[in-house]
Image (tube, rainbow, N blue to C red; front, side, top):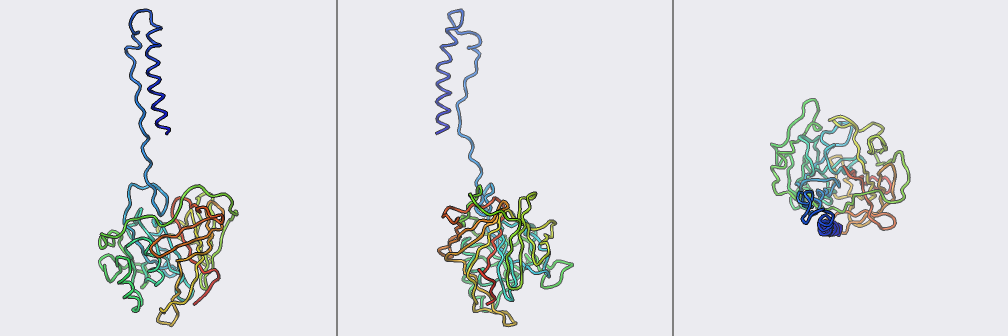
Amino acid sequence: MQVKRVIGIALAGTAVLAPAVACSSSGGGASPAAQGAEPVPSASASPAPPPEHPFTGQPVAGRRPVLAVKIENTSSGKPQLGLRSADLVYIEQVEGGLTRLMAVFSSKFPAKIGPVRSARISDLHLLPMFGKPALAYSGVQSKMVPLVQRASLFDVSDSAAPGAYFRQSGRVAPYNLFADTKKLLAKAPKASKADDIGFTFGDAPAGGTPKKSFNVKYPAARFTFTWSADQKRWLVTQDGKKDMAAEGGQLGAPTIVVQYAKTTRSEFHDFTGSYTPLIHTTGTGKAVVLRDGKAYKAEWSRSSEKVGTMFTTEGGEPMTFSRGQVWIVLAAPKPVQP
């Protein structure tokens, strides 16, 4: 409607202006100024802003394939390489009360990523929201192999795409396995492109509680997210140590989502007999969203594995995230070791 109003005014101004100039001239014809006047250009619609990426809310030229990578998250595998380029970083509980990461890339890809580690059953319940993405990992429990083969994903593990992996010097096995992202994507040319997963980006909602830091505890790991007003990010500390990136600088994100999800014992376990947790990411639950130095109480819902997760305020409005990388911390309401 605004464009239409601008066009109407411009045309009207042209129609009225010409007679006015003729009447003010001292001769019978139009004045030289009127004869040499340039026509008023017609108004045109403003170019549409570039589309926002559904994972980060940042402008992008187009949608690219989705690549998920399982990353080591204990001190033995740090510092990790490539996480700073991720759109999303999921923290998941694994055996022994420890954690592992699943980094999701689409808007940009680092040249290398790692250390790459094994997948878990909870990954197979999370990934369908991305359509049919590529999944990079290093091994699964033998009982899980048939499930992986039937899952909605393109397998680009070290056994399916061995040429995409290499051993990084200066690190010890199994924490020295890294991958070349271009080679991974080349093995999954039909991987789904990024699409809506339920996130909403924009200005902060009303309310929120000012927070300098926020803690999340697992049975054998603890995280602190500390707000940096200078960097406009929540900086990550794990087990009392700053979580540093191999590229340099401390890991962190403008938005941290602590998604409290029921965590139970799955049918899988490691060679020591420790059972693998199963994180229930469908249904509904509570959440805390950290952004702009505040903590917002929120609720999450996901009706099925094929759709994304919706986050709302306590009043039922969309819970908006800050634009940029998002960390999703999947945690039990109370630390539990199945």
